[in-house]
Length: 470
Image: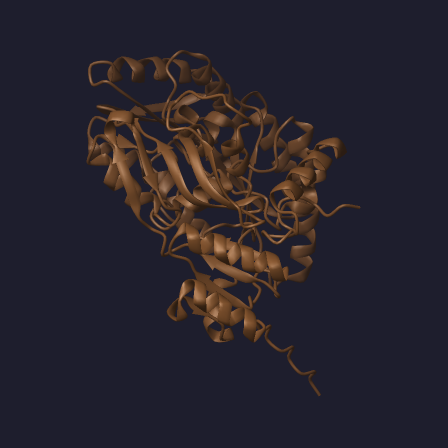
């Protein structure tokens, strides 16, 4: 006889009434069937919240947080749920604060090169709006068409352009936010210089909703480049490609994208696409440079020269958009190929020093052989941000057990090489228990103290980001 299913969590009636008073009857979900879609992200984790509250302005955010703080109700902030680490998965006895209705672009100020936006604005929507004024916001995650600016800020998600233009931390001037005590705060400045007080803006960015919930962001815009050149370089092995990356990053012209695929990734694409690269290719770089129209050809030539070494097999430069599309065909074919082979793969984004990238890939090859786990690697080579994909079947218990050991060894290797466990996907729940391998006890104590100052009752995304004490 099967045991009865646990009852779905329910908010106390008095709390539910007060929440409805704050956000409105049509902005609060409490039925389990309605709440389930807001209980998961792009990880394998899911939990049923007691309720989902759709906030429409900063005042509502402060009121909801104050109410939850009063009743010690955990709160998970959510944009569109594209994260991969479980950071937006709620507590079973908590609520989800959904920001998808706070999606206004409040101001675009070309004279001061800034934009003010609410957190629910989709990245691609912002890019289109500021492009009309001749600007862009540098962070460009692969999920730009479906991820929000608030999510980008929560994870410090950047994408390929970070190699030249930086992450959200370098491209955000200030924030409005609400702390875990329900107190509205304003951080940062409206100018590109400012040193008054501690830098709370950069502290909140990347904190995954554990310190304060962002209600408005002042973003630093960058003028669109006049021209762009795209190159593709293929190499005999990873060591030649890694040497080229180091050489490219050591010369004066910084590419706006420097992407990497290893031999396993190339082999994967070869099965599903017309690769159009030399058969002996063991590693591939996609390179883009941008700048003034009368300078971009010289910039491309300089980067192309730096990419040449004894292991180079072929260097292609696109002459027009059709050739640009052709050169990117290999990279764009990778994700569909991975989804076809392992739709529930484990995808970790780690970072190692550029000079040790080849050593890292060699180590991953050894782990793949020793633990019988297929590993495919690609990513943002210019800053050593490698996406490590373990192609596993979650329904195979033995394979998943090996994968757990393999992933632990991957993280040990990253730390041993002087790297970090996450470049832009965050920590959430998936990497939380590995954080102490990178951070020392004194640093963790300081971070827990900061968490307590912002969120004295621990209601904001509890259990995420930092490992439990003890």
